[in-house]
Length: 313
Image (cartoon, rainbow, N blue to C red):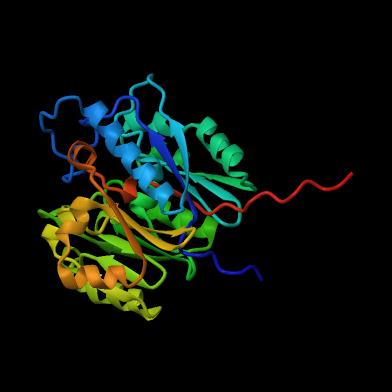
């Protein structure tokens, strides 16, 4: 029987944007996204992107960078975790996305770059893109927050996270589902990963955002594995305090998040998180404001197996 998949990946995919900016096609469902007159958004986003990539590399995380193409214009290209996920058994999953102008982000050449530069092996592709024809969506590890070792997928239902597609994902990858409804300003929260994050021994979740009837069950399941659970307030969630990712660095566990998210936490919450790894926090105000996503959204963690040596002739 294969060993459980580790929670933390040692490598991530990042996509360097070519035309970053406010995306009107995603604004109706993403209330974390704000249209503000920020000059030179693309240049600012590139500085923020490079700052995160450099900080992760210094922490010993392997960062594979692919470049967005200028055409067609893809304002959200730096959020690859919404269209692809990489799994330890060699599976690559491609996801159905709500916004039509985000679908061209799905590029086979990016997956080939991951395989080539990382020396990884892919054994199968699970392609869920056909669900777009039915108007049903599941936006990767934005929609899904995975407890990889226990094979439990947490998902807040929303226009971007459909129950039927969740069922297909769970069947194909042998995951149990924990689904719930979560709201901000009386509207469904667009992605689960802005209200929840799961590390090997801790979790962060905005309990108040989850509907009353389902909240206790979610917390019970998170604590069942012995995790420390940090319950953040809605205001902290809006500051992206739930949008973090645990990774494996050369010197130990890395917890990647934005400086804005780190500042949103109180001292006690920070102590709990710091007890589980070294925090790598960077400033990404342009990306958070115009894109409505945080550090975790910028990272597609790579759990693929590494290719073995070629057989001797």
